[in-house]
Image: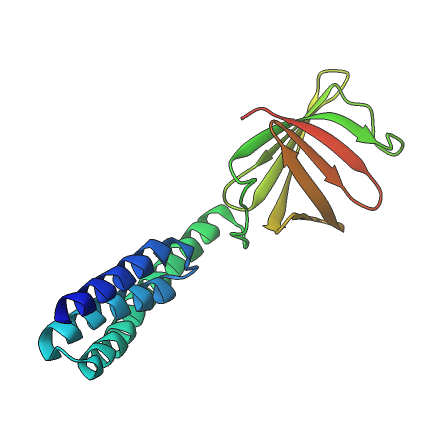
Length: 187
């Protein structure tokens, strides 16, 4: 009977540890790992269900505290980095660190002629658009952005753009109420 308890408990802990990748915070991950380790320790010490449950509870609490401290450290590092780069958003995935060439935009009315437009989503919440004009001169705009689900939110000085985007391979389509843009991935 005791061997089967250990096997069930060991299997449960393995399932818990496999699911750790799905936790969104260090606190939750720590609580989950701590509860598994605490349950094993409780079972090893007391060899009964009560000890196992007490161990799981104590382990979850300790694991949460450790993971939560890690979350605080990470937030502090991100805050320092955001001040260094003058940004406020860390919601940049999956666009952060990518660079795109504007292939087409509709409607074209209201957009000055250009030779090329390159849009670079920096990993620190800034989007840099480099426009090469027909005469060879270059204009660069630097704006804030964030990604929420499949929504791309760009904060321009006088305008907030809230667009939907879809990436398929090396192509991204950005659609908003007033425009639709097709971009090709450069990196």
